[in-house]
Length: 305
Image 1: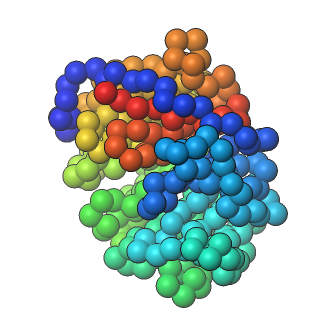
Image 2: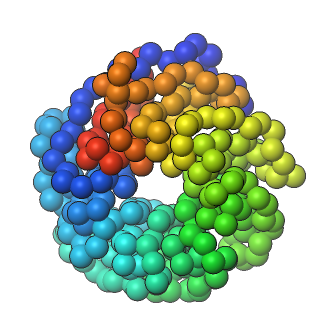
């Protein structure tokens, strides 16, 4: 679990992108390096941030957008909305191909497996839907619990999927069988965010209780518990080169950790010109850059040196 570089990261704010009129809930990078952003407006904006600070409207949906995922090996974008529907959009033609009405509440997350041709959607109705990424047809719906399903992460080996829920649990299913391997209580209030280590030996989780926990994925026991933020943890990414893990939170901050779970840096509004409201989402960009966004309607592009 040792990162390539043990030194504390040097982070700078590269730019701030403005234009959204509502909260931003999801960021996604396309293969061409452009950035998609979406949220409460139902508008998906596209940013060629390396060349310009201006955005174009990529697509519109009739409801808020909480989740986006590019189908692996495809040019098709899956968009999960507050109405419980998935809109499949051809990114080349910018045409809507199909709508699947799968949930009775918001879709909070989407994940896809390239090797198995499976897609997963997390519903606010406590249901996990599985669909075929080639035919775009529904395969099954599992009612996991009465609460919200917040996050879905497929292991790097592709043999397991982890599900974080509003019932305070994490559930692990085998793939492709979708048999439940284990379920365990992870956080008080809700388990919100997940991240597999590169070798799948560890699973990071973040919750409404503001804690980050690191789990051994053989026994699924806690190996580390970190009082990480002041309010709920919403999302994680890991930088490819340095190995640093980044968390974002409702407490308005962005924090960096090494792979041992040791705190490295706190990016806030006062010292780093960071966010002034809840930070809801982040995504990796090319190189050692990443973007964050949230309720202040701003996208912040960061870089490490």
